[in-house]
Length: 392
Image (cartoon, rainbow, N blue to C red; front, side, top):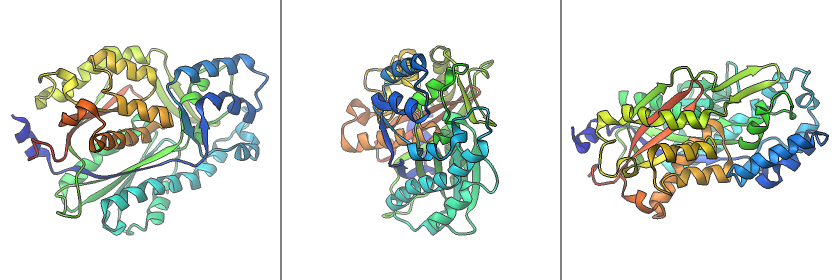
């Protein structure tokens, strides 16, 4: 099957608009260890502080945004006293913050889309920062002025793949009814996992050194309305693969003290040894993995879980310098925003292609959006840039 025929069969679902948002509070990465150990009243742990400084220096991150402020931490002593249960307090903080952050991103996407919010038929919200029913999706729908008949779906605790996980669902909904317009939103605030440094949990230093707050939104639809809707990327094919026996490598769990994470030091090696097979399985049936130039013939929107993860992608796939420039830029500007990050990367890929600063990637019509999550789960979406040769 040729690429043009493949696109014709799958061209209905497309990303029609993208929006992103961050809290106003911003901390420079080189100042973060001093800020963190001051606000957590942990200056009596100089060894841990020195370790965090080394992590921050090697992270490739320049700044991050947070809903959490020093004043907020001071008014919630339970966040710093580890023996005290703090999950309820954390959920109360996120109950208001999360829908408002999500709405800020969604409003930008709706404005770019150019149609009224009441034309949205489905809302899919994904987050690691909340739990419960009714969830933040109800408040978000009210803030946006969506119809009471909007069909809502909420995904909790998908880790870094939380954003990528919503796109296959939106694709299926859109292709089932070309009148459907699906608003997908992923919003994250790391207050849910915030805590003072703990010598017994060195992984907490890594989490607090990498993660930041943000929200991303996209509108997905099929059969775009001429002169009103402008497709950005066609969503050609989606796949999910779980790497065998990797469950302990990455996990996310709610507990009395909030959200706990585990990020194994073996993760970069697991990526290097496994990612190419996952991509071959996903792309070879489409005839895209064996073309001239191999993996460098595609554009890439990869979730930047961390600098070492991006380096592993490059090494495993033999990617040329600059192929992951969009992912590295987002990591540098915002850190790892869990599920929201992939939407920021997709927006940056779009911006670079439209602005002509994507280098050779401008000529790449086909691309891949990819994110890793607990499991270890690999979420893959094959994209086709709207307006390129095969589409015409």
